[in-house]
Amino acid sequence: MIVRKGEMVSVTGRNGAGKTTLIRAIMGLSPAASGQIEIRKEDFTRRPAHDRATAGVGYMPEDRGLVPQFTVRENVLVPGWALRLTDIEKRFDRICGLIPEISEMRDRKASSLSGGQQKFVALGRALLPAESLLLLDEPFEGVSPKLSRRLAEVLFKLKSERLAVVISQSEDKHSADLFAREYRIERGANVMSQHPNVK
Image 1: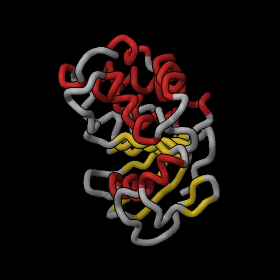
Image 2 (image 1 turned 60 degrees about the vertical axis):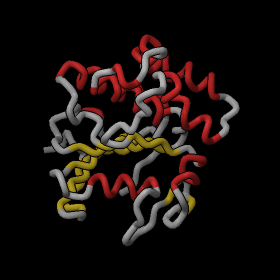
Image 3 (image 1 turned 90 degrees about the vertical axis):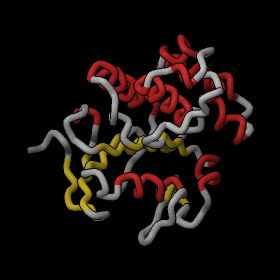
Image 4 (image 1 turned 180 degrees about the vertical axis):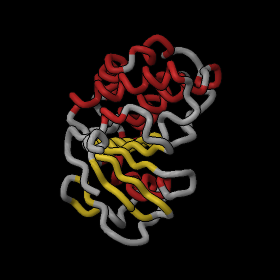
């Protein structure tokens, strides 16, 4: 799988097909059984997850992984604190521009948010360190149709950010026009790759 700057690709498959394992392997949270993972033409296959974050990789897990007692703003800033970024406020303002909902909810505790609202916060947190690659694991899962459409609008705006984006999903009915290519996997193997609008 190759994902270029400014390009979004979809990894689609049933539950248990290996989508989350693939995303976690790219992020360095699960070992890669085979193959090679290159970011900015550099081999990261055996390097730890924090090295990838330092290289500008952002990751949004399927379960969101927010800190319930933290505010929305604090949850978004966590990667910046961990990486000791010097432009953390500038990055936060940029994210608020992309996702105004985060600005509106910034002082609310994560525990007070709906599942859909938490998705926006998790996306904002993933965007904070993301300068080269953004990994989104099942962003549409468990989200109402209205919030799903809004999430798709936010993702469409990311096309201007020149990020490489990999999105895993169980069904390919969500925003197919977002993607340059779609990869289908079954039992951990890629079985098809195509442009989603080519029949």
